[in-house]
Amino acid sequence: MIESSTKSVSNEKKKAMGDQQDRNHMAQWSVPQIQALLDLPFTDLVHQAQTIHRQYHDANAIQLSTLISVKTGGCPEDCGYCPQAARYHTGVENQDMLSLDTVVAAAQAAKTEGATRFCMGAAWRGPKQRDIDKMSEIIGAVKVLGLETCATLGMLKPGQAEQLKQAGLDYYNHNLDTSPEFYGEIITTRDYQHRLDTLEEVRKAGINVCCGGIVGMGESRLARAGLIAQLANLDPYPESVPINYLVQVEGTPLYSTEPLDSFEFVRTIAAARITMPKAMVRLSAGRRQMSESVQALCFLAGANSIFYGDKLLTTGNPETESDKALFEKLGLRTL
Ligand code: SAM
Ligand code: DTB
Ligand code: SF4
Image 1: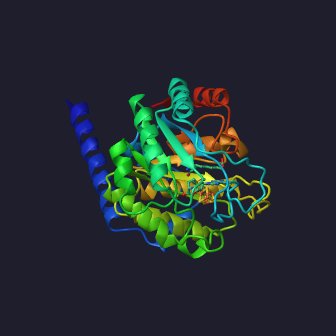
Image 2: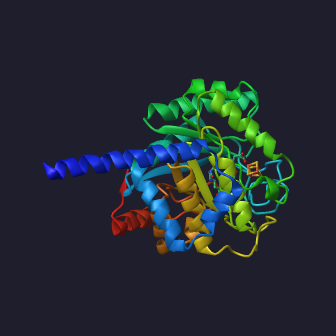
């Protein structure tokens, strides 16, 4: 009797804490508030993130997304991190759009390996109508396999998101990449507002938003706080938040940037978790450059999703067998 009443009080308390988090979100996050989080002693920050994580998620479960590049290289944009920009000489071979059969076979293989979401990327500034038509066919066929579908095709014009939604698209990935202030150091061929406009198109069409950024591009902690503030203040905030650790590719302007200390990466994950409690926070690119211990810290800080499969878009990712071994060691189960 006493035990059950204690249990019910603690559940109420838990709910009240959850409601408080929702109110916090509605109150919006300022950059100084997020910087104050990033400035916390490491264990205090991770503890806070893990506490919130447990209110909203199963702390020992992880979601797996697999990537495929459906159209590779030759991109006209100048994103300073990207091996697929035509203007940088990175050795990435251009490839026209993959056939429906090739993509469906890869999606089936991803499903068999345990992925629940299949994310299709294209090196476009934005899709043309014929690209939307081909992608629609592909999205429909992937969805039939019972996978969640995600696409990242660049900037969308009015009407394009609706067509993708009709084809069965569940998520659209479009990253803000960094803070508005640092953005101009990395990309000049499209501005921040263009990105926000595409995110608005995605929301209006009723597609879930996958939006995050890259850390380790030479930005300051303030710029990381600025990125998290932009993401957390989207209304509503994204359902999925990929946090990428810059993969340095020879030939890109960001190659040989001073590598960011791993703890700063973990701090960024924690700030994403605290400010966007319901989101799936994805430990994204850069895992191959990270030790297992750093990845475990990311899970402790609230990451609950990864890119799974031997390749990201053009660069490597940990082998699935080593990821399985890591899950085993950490007692993580996959969703
Ligand atoms: N072309 C489309 C666009 O940029 O919107 C979609 C594909 S693009 C490769 C998707 C995202 O991958 C970028 O916004 C960026 O955040 C991430 N990305 C690209 N190159 C990366 C790298 N070298 N390291 C980490 N993340 C990277
Ligand atoms: C995201 O935020 N990261 C993924 C996915 N969304 C499309 C891409 C990472 C790309 C890493 C560099 C490459 O493999 O080309
Ligand atoms: Fe093109 Fe996307 Fe790479 Fe930028 S990130 S260069 S838009 S493929």
